[in-house]
Length: 377
View 1 (cartoon, rainbow, N blue to C red):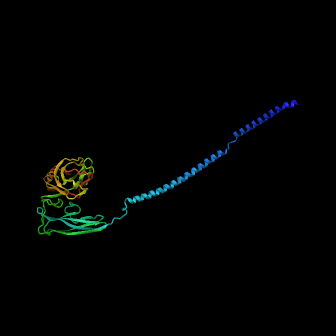
View 2: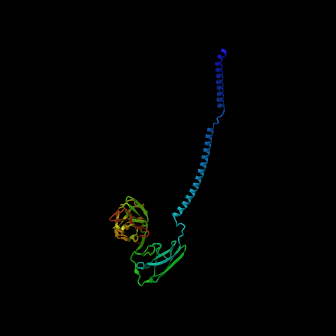
View 3: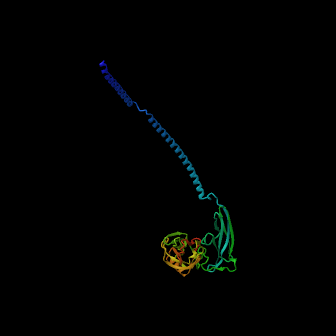
């Protein structure tokens, strides 16, 4: 009996040992299975799924964004093109507007004549023509004894015997048609033809008699220009006198071709400034214009204060430079067979009215100035 009670603790201890061993074996098997079997955790699957969904969403969004960008670019290009077309049309709204064309019209006027020169025993007329029309008509004369020396709108007709007459016809032509006018010019137009003053209204090409005592010639200006002190040099067809925006004074200059009077005896000379334009109000401070004979050579002048010889000072705005000094200087150039005769124009008095405005006189080589020389053949 005592032995029975003595074995009970050992039995209980044995059972606990069996239970513990069994539990450890189960745990070991579970760990081994966990290592051998791939993880299939639901949270990981959820993350992967979300990542996949996010990638898909981003791709879809990028495609949509690219599509929208292409549409916007296409629309923008269209708008830009339309804007460019609008801008092009706005640059010159009259570009497609057709200029109205007008047939020519023509009138004739006697500018000089009949004038008689006893030394040549010749009577002559100078006739001016005025034309209108679009496009600008071309002009032709049936006779021009000056060979175009007076310009395209003026001709000269010489009559060589008392009783002679000539019917001058001028014609204007453009793309829309033509017009013509005629005038009868006669030595007998007046009882006593007016005597021409020596050198006035004559032209070397108009009178080809070897017995001539004097010939007039118009010396063509090669170019004109201006110098602004410490600022710039301008060479074109115009001479300027006045002041610039920084109140610097402006001087003008002209260069004339004198090859046709080389070696000739000069009898008379005059430089006529018969027309002008104004920029601003230069007459408010300009006093007198000083004309000087200068020499800067073949290239345009680059010195503001050019040395020279005074040919006289005159009142603005139109004037005629003449006198013994001009004749003398021209004779020197002729004797030396020089090819050009050069002059400068500057204001005598105030350099500027100091109002920071560009104000000046404009003399154009084609429409403002005429250099006439009378020489002995």
